[in-house]
Image (tube, rainbow, N blue to C red; front, side):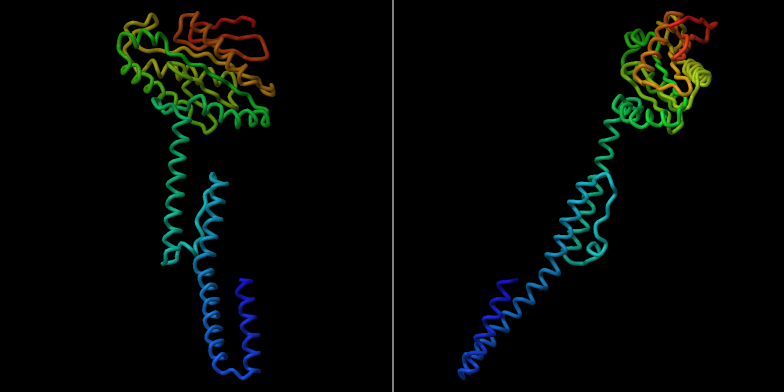
Length: 295
């Protein structure tokens, strides 16, 4: 733009000199040149306004969308309404952004969910802990963890086959989904036949009752298991650990206590619930008469 302005100024000075010198032909030439230059300036201004400026806006917006990709964004409305190439480009970019966001959400769901059962996986557990642990500490509420293991599942797979084993796990996952339905309930498949449930604001008695009800519902599915030493159908064992109200919790420690309770449960014959209260004497409760011991 500075070059165009300088050229225009020189032409005007030249025209003034020629007028003074009395050169009509050169005056006409300069008038034509000046008119052409003015048209060029006007064309450049129009080109910048109609194309370059909108494209720069689109580029800035795409850069913003890339930097804040987790925040829903819409392309500039005034550009998307245009009927020219800029409007077409804007609408196509918006479509690409929406498709990319949809693909990203689907990929994220795949990375957080177990593909067989639809429950969360270990990665989802880690992401949920980042939210639930600070929340439980801020609310100073009780937290319970459940470790769930399918009794004699290896024997089930060996005799009925892995496809039947997959169907069995899906059915069990369905019971877990029906039992633990609060937004804050975390239900994950750790791998194989092991599942984990985390419940905030859930005390020892409530957690035990939920675990035992869930255990009974899984047994009531009536999935045949003639190779189990526990029952003629598929059953589960459940270890529960609960942090008392106000106790500063460590999730890893709680899961370890739930896992220990699960092994206690298996030692007592399986198909039952064993419960531990953290920070106090360990209490074991189950479908069989309760047994108490100290940690």
